[in-house]
Figure 1 (tube, one colour):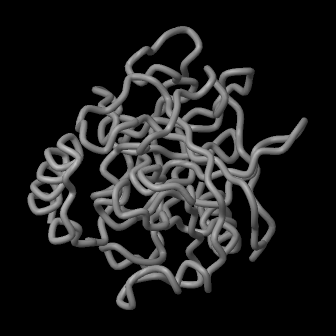
Figure 2 (cartoon, rainbow, N blue to C red; figure 1 turned 30 degrees about the vertical axis):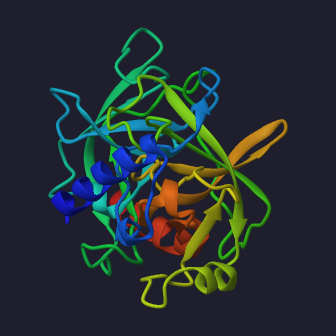
Amino acid sequence: MKVLAFTLLALLAVSAQAGKLTDNLIKLIPSFPTGFVINGTEAEPHAAPYIISLSSKFEKHAHICGGTIVNKEWIVTAAHCIVSDPVGMGVIAGLHKRAEVDERTQHRQIDFGRVHEQYSGGVGPFDIAVLHVSEPFEFNEWVSPAALPSREEIHEGETHLYGWGQPKSYIFTAAKTLMTLTTQILNYEECKAVLPEDAPLAPSNVCSDSLQQSKSACNGDSGGPLVVEHKDAPSELIGIVSWGYIPCGLANQPSIYTRVSAYIDWIVKIQNAYYVLN
């Protein structure tokens, strides 16, 4: 799958640069995000103080996914970001430039985590995981949480995606600074209607669409936040970057997220289980 996706994107890169994208090259493939925010813009420094960079090892941090701080001890991310036991993974909060770790950043180790028990391991629903950090975050202007939505709350209107990614679909190097993209939420029925018939879409997903060709959210960092921003109040985490159709920046398909409001009871259950055991 990864080799096929990379080959297809490489072919599309040549076509896009030449301005001769042909119909037979556009073959939509459901795929996990590739680490890009297509045609996004650089975010204001620390505009998303709740976003974290997740690494497979605490000792040597190498960004693999995004995630969202929801309180001083807990992070929410995508299940497909957790390839094995999450204990020992590393988290850095307070970043703007992805590789710039300084006095504003906070490095934490994961000491407990759970992937949703119904997640199949592929593209599809139940793509959510919760992670506990061994030392609480210290909240300040650079590190602070996003709010969880109400149980089964359905949002509409404008929303924002954040992630470290390259703003051009034909360049495969991740950007150094945090990127953002403003999108519009599509309700489930609208999203289902425009996706291929065999799309692995579930009511527990939420979709977004930039409504403009070549501007796509589906390649934002896996596990990263889709939020509704409020004036004088914390941003509300409504989605976790899950999957999309490639080449999404060219095919103009919606982006698919795990709808957080569908999993509030599950998140609380996992947190309570942790405190009972510890």
